[in-house]
Length: 541
Image (tube, rainbow, N blue to C red; front, side, top):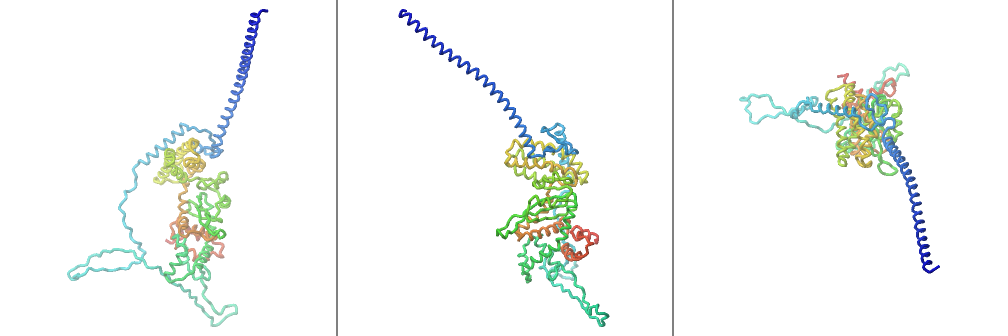
């Protein structure tokens, strides 16, 4: 083989090797491409499966969101006000529901545009002073009058109200005694003494009037006992603070049985408003005041109010004991302890629209658009109440008006709450307002069921106001017993206020008559309560 042939053969071998390497490389690329397509198909299948899982989880989250801050058995109030317990799963607003709400709003707006029948306000006129006040005449004559050439005309009379310092006096009870000249038998006493009348506090010189004034000054006029002691000193009367505290305890003990009777009467009614407020209590162990809670029950129709103190607790166990046998409607704010009555047979929880409105008012600066819309809807509900008041509707007529005008607005408003909540920050003010309102919407909407039910709890809050004023003045209660006594006094005096009864007149009546019930169990202590005292006064008139 020649050299040229060898060179040619070497060239062919090298080319073969090159082509083999390229072929091997291409084969590897083709195999990789085939594996990639298979892997890609597998990945697509996994992604598709995960997308399905994600969609399923999204649906579960949306469902759980509604269940967490809504009732699973009644997520929305039913569009038909006569079928409140029918379940409803839809989120979309039906055209018929929207039309009912628009129609109701138009009717409310038309009523608001009607000319008011109220009389135009006149200039204020000074009311005459009470006729029962004694009059003292002070005559003033013009100077340098020639009575022979003048005829006296009808004088001009101006009445000025004056006041003298309080008059204290000592009432002496003088019991006359008689001795028998001839004693008939040993069993007959030789000396006969007039029977001592029952005093409010045995072996005490405090009369009914002074006890009434001390109690009223503390719990109505909010004067602490130490200030009252100073006022007594100004009249040169020295009464130790410990004595006044003892009198206060004795009067509370006298009222306690009537207080329990008042509690029974309130819980026998079928419509109660309930609320709580704080009351500072001295903790001797910690040497400071601690926050205690006092509960308020208000029987709306008979206008009876009761304050309940249980060691300062606001726990659910207090509500369980307080409403243990109660049957009827309970109107409260959104406090969670009342949620247990949602499923109790015979009890109908009702919400307070004033509390919901307050939440949206607080959110105005954060989200004006949403808060304003919510306040507008709540305002329409209150417009319906004003219309019922102006037309002086009966309970049945008021319930019908609410069903026709207020209920369609509530149906639309609830669905707005459900749709807007996912769009806002849960911890923001508007988020909290929407969540609070939606959480208790079933309670909020139930006031339409009975014309006796109020749209809010404002009257109950008004009953609590004296305690808020009192704690700013007397600052705290010395212990749990003092707080319980305060609950008794606020209950009785609150009933006086609700029935427009003179506090002092009732307290004197109570203290002078309470001992008549000590041993005569045929008498009902309810006769001593303020609302029955008013009935007795009306009968005498």
